[in-house]
Image (cartoon, rainbow, N blue to C red):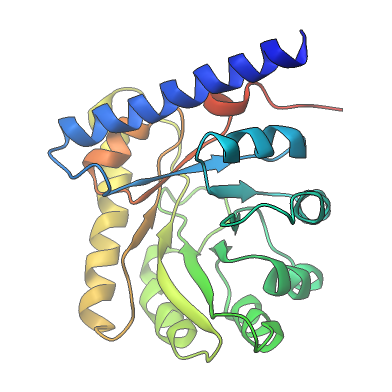
Length: 238
């Protein structure tokens, strides 16, 4: 496929993704600016991110740190990019994440949050944090369990260089809209409870919804929906 054909393909896919989000918001009776599209750009080359930026996309999600740092260096000339780290986060990666990202969606331990706070450069704005919740209680999934969420949230909200913004989850796959909505509704309710117990925290974010459950997530109040393949095509594999 030629570069022009690739550009046209990405442009079409991007507009289709935006239209899908627009329709989901309309059907949910929500404002068109109530949810933001987060373009998950892991494994995709910097050139594709650049094209998406040219189409108006500003929020990009990356899972793999070294790959993301290389892209950030290549795209340093672009204004207004907001970088979200959405992958698993180990202690040995926190410094680079604290220095190079605007958001982290995958915090589920106080140790990681403390390191991010300590390592966030003082010349940067506080790092926006979503706590990852294991809402479906899957043994194979990362995330804090719902019953431990409030205690963790209170400790993270007190850290000086972080802004606790909300919650993130990747529910277990489910068939049908009603089944998809159940864990997403539970995450929404968890955020509502935190808003009551932490009234001074800027808790305004629900990072939930991907290609298979976007409509269900929007119905349940998602404010950030994460789409990768729908925009950039199938993931590159080794």
